[in-house]
Length: 127
Image 1 (cartoon, rainbow, N blue to C red):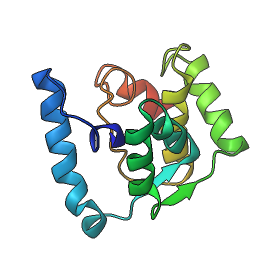
Image 2 (cartoon, helix red, strand yellow; image 1 turned 30 degrees about the vertical axis):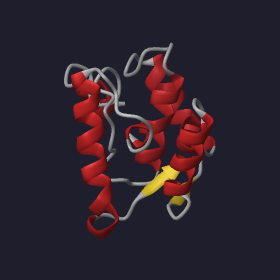
Image 3 (spheres, rainbow, N blue to C red; image 1 turned 180 degrees about the vertical axis):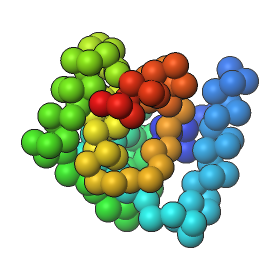
């Protein structure tokens, strides 16, 4: 999600829409929610275009970081082993596990394929 906040506007209208919604949401999110990220989010935001990465990291500088500890890694592995998340997507499993371990109520993401997929949500919740 943070990847849509900075950088040039995308020519694809779906991605452009996500960029615009994300930027609007981000403008007031810290007044409505307590925001958290993890070192995995930091690593993902630092990747890609150097200047955009720098801008994303500046936005995340004031946000509390959640640890990726042994319990998080265990839950992520369980999600992968039990097909809640495809084995090819360990980062997605880790995002879910970080939120679960830390009791996070909302996980803001545009990842409908693995993280907020209605077809697999029941598996993730059961795991």
